Amino acid sequence: MSAKPKKKITIYLEHDLARALDLEARLRGLPTTRAAADALRRIFLDEKDEAVADTVKLRLDRVEKREVVREREIAIVKETLLLFIRVWLEHTPPPREETLDATNAVAERRFQSFLELLAESMAPGQTLFPYAAHGRRADAGAPMNGATE
Image 1: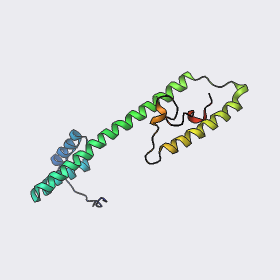
Image 2: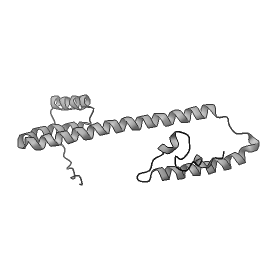
Image 3: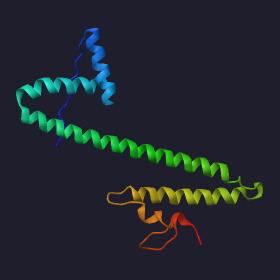
Image 4: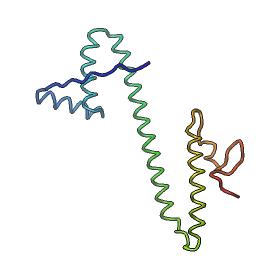
């Protein structure tokens, strides 16, 4: 099911009406365009067909709730990644000068393994969850990222 294309229009509002629209958008946490579209939908769809308007409202509410949850999850993932990087940088000493070449070679291999694992996990139906508990595949028992034991 594809979405219908939207039509762009420009309207000029009286100052008090524009302020009321901006306030409605801020209170609902929506962009002004979305708040205006919702207001117009209430006016025109509600008067035309109450059942269609109710269905549209329910669907829009569901989509909006999912979007709020998705935004929260993305924020958590970003904060987790940034915290991990910060802690890693603060607590990992730099490599010694005499082992720099070997360290760089190992780092390159480990990074390539990481990229392969990431690509594998992004395939449809795949996840990194089996690695989460102990850094091993639940089914294979192989070390993650090419590490040796």
